[in-house]
Length: 255
Image 1: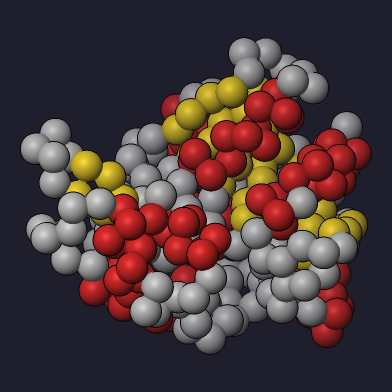
Image 2 (image 1 turned 180 degrees about the vertical axis):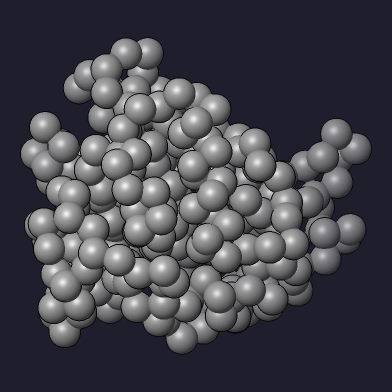
C-alpha cells in the first residue's frame, strides 16, 4: 500500500512519525518543523484508513506494520528512527518485533504493548451522527459532535478530518465504517511478540492513564534497553499539550 506522507527537512538522519487513531500526518507538522531545524529529515505518514492514504478493509497491526515496511523500502530509508503515538506506537512496536535490524531507535508515545478495552465508540458514534449532506459549516458539525464529546479540543482534533470535496460537499478523511468495526482490534495486545533489544524510549503524560506504573515491568521485559520518561502536566496527546518538553526529551534520546 502506497501511503501518503509529508516530508519536513531535506538532509540529516531520517525520522518517521506515525500518528494515532483518528489522526493524520498534519497533526505533527508543528513538532516536525522544530525537529527538522535540528538537522533531521522528518517523514510524517498517514496510516491506512486515515488522512490521504488509501482505504482498506483490513485494519490491524501486522497489516499496518507491513505498510510501514513498504514505506521504508520505497523511500530507501535505511535504519531510520521510528516514532509512534498511541495506535502509531503500537504499529512501531509491532514492526520492531517483525522487522529487526531495519531501524536505529524506537520512540513510543503514551501507549503500552497491552490490551486496551474499546473506549472510542462514542467518538465514532458522534462522527457518524453528523449528516454530511445537510450540514453547512464546521460549527454545525461541532454542535452535533458536542452531544457525544464534551471536550472542545478533542472535537477540534476529530473535526480536522472533515473536508470539502471538489463538489463542495463535506466528507471524512477517515474510513469510519472499518475503524468502527475494528476498534477492538486497535486495542488488542500485539501478536508475534519477541524481545526487542534496540534503544527504545517510552514517553508518557503524567495525567494520562494509558501507561501506568504497573505496565512498566511488562514494557521492560519486552524492551530491556528502554528509557521511560514522564512529562508532567501532559495527558494522552503529550506532543500537543507539552510540545517544548516533548521535543527536548525526544532530541536528548535520539542524539
